[in-house]
Image 1 (cartoon, helix red, strand yellow):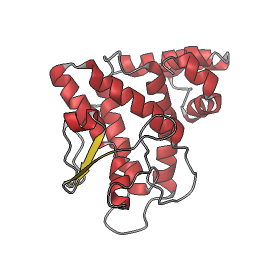
Image 2 (cartoon, helix red, strand yellow):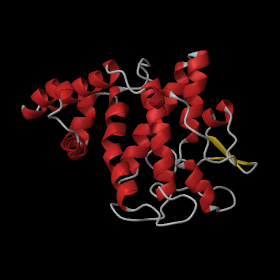
Image 3 (cartoon, helix red, strand yellow):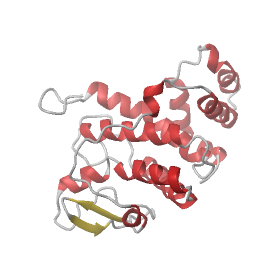
Length: 222
């Protein structure tokens, strides 16, 4: 799945919801609305991606997001070898039936914090930063595959949950890391239109969860 047509054909409801959540009355989205009103969803997607690429965003969006915890210590070589490390414990992340990472994996000690950390996507930012230094396209291809895999295998439950992919803290931290790579990879062809659209289609879910199911108290109220 590499093209916008693939996404529109395989996940039409997801694409439709994306556009329903956008303010298509905005002047700068006029061309997107024209295609959407004609039910030309692939073209609407292309115009939406063009909008993000050409529109200058606020300076803060391109700054490095904060580190939320220090128990994660990753290296590019480990990540590219499908290894994850937390609290000085390193192990390979198993693959799921879909061929991507098992995002529910709890690591060698059956630790739910391992699964939670896996779904915060710290490694996306790491690979993006290394790509900006080395311009190794394999780093971005890795991100591309994982974005597509995570979105299609982690459906939004629409309710408060402690499942690894959708607990509140993970949903909030992941949103920050996604914004970072989305804007920094605008000029990276290896980050495919399919991955970009799938990522955008999941943003309303993240917003809905954080708005409606955030913690009522504690040290990570969103």
